Amino acid sequence: MAQEMIEQDTQLISISDSALTQLRDLLQKQGRPEMGLRVFVQPGGCSGMSYGMGFEDQPEEGDAISEVGGVRLFVDSVSARYIKGAEIDFVDSLMGGGFTVHNPNAVSSCSCGSSFDTGSDASTARGCSH
Image (tube, rainbow, N blue to C red; front, side, top):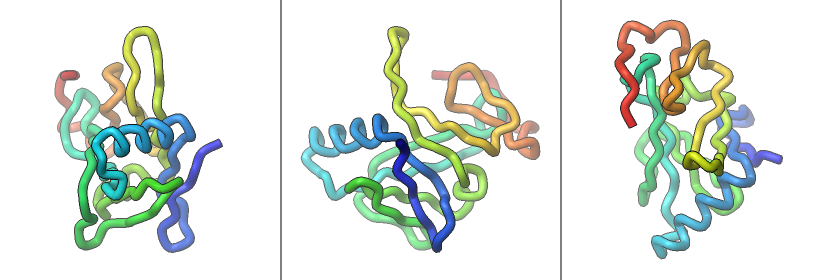
């Protein structure tokens, strides 16, 4: 069952229980459980746009902010347009696991798992890089 991030009574992004557990563990290992996770998109990747995530101390002006299971999530307004309704998940596999984003807005994606196209941004496509 996924935990949901709410912005002004509208679901923006959800996070799976396995991803939430991994995030809590990472924050504990860093000794900074008060940090938040920034989720963003940027131009690039083989499909035109790519996902990014990173820990930050504080949100920036204009961020959508939510706390999900004790973890704060920060999403800037531009990224929110591309990932609204998406789910952050954690996949553990024999070939290597990690965080991934399941995005209903993506019309195509790249095999590298971090790049996607919403239909209007394909002109910036590049080769996959890990």
